[in-house]
View: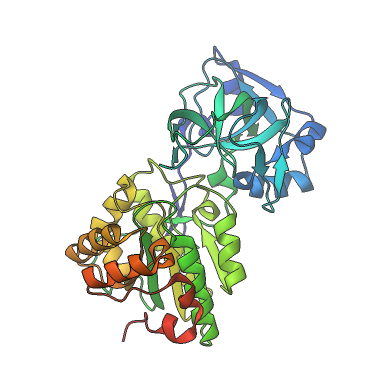
Length: 388
């Protein structure tokens, strides 16, 4: 790892990334060929590869494709792939979040990545350049290992090759504007990071429990109260919808894990997850907001989230939590789990607040306020969640 004077590090490169491109091309089982600039410009780019797209717009010369049976892709590697068969995802979210219609035969630039989505797909990065699936519209390539019954089969992709330049395989981490901190110790509550604004995290029972909507409404309410609010998404799967929702709600600065070069955070080791949380809060703090609001994706039982919540670091960085749930039982269980872990739960919100009956049930079962999601746009409601 390369450490900078400020204590940040550049994401570590694999051994293959560090090897000279010419040497890699000569390895048995690998083939390297130059890719014409016009071909790269013509390829449809995914949201996950937006920082690469900026570079290609300026200069698409000098890139090559690495293929062959000995190539081992990794999460974050950029791959040029061909659409073989359309399935669940028939549109690809572009760098500016426009949904591009896909056709069989299209060539697309996406990133390898693992996917965790109980309502959609579970997927993993394969060990070779076998056919893969488009497992997220934001541009994630992986092999589906499980899917929800409501999902159509995933769109099938044929990898043409990993994109390389004179430094090796092009990775999202190398192109990202933000860097992960490398000096993140386990510390007592309130000592990390120093001088930060109030930090509120939004968690939930699962995906689609109303976390992103609740966060956006909270941003709106705090901004309506005259506060400067920065927003972030610490974990999840790369897509532009939530960051743009937060910006539309009035967040002055918005960042997420993709700005740190991560296509998703599923199967990310715990050290990098905790570094990501601190690095995200640090980067948002640098923008000078009064309040930071951060979404933790998926549910409290998701492996990476569960480990993060059990880490004392979480309580050091996050002051309070808003918990989004789909029903009263989920709210009761979630609040109990968080409070048992020593986490300060400010309120329950989310999908359950669409139902007056569910609100009544939850209100009788939990000891914290149950606040309607869209009521959080009111300044009084939003500011009531700030620490006193």
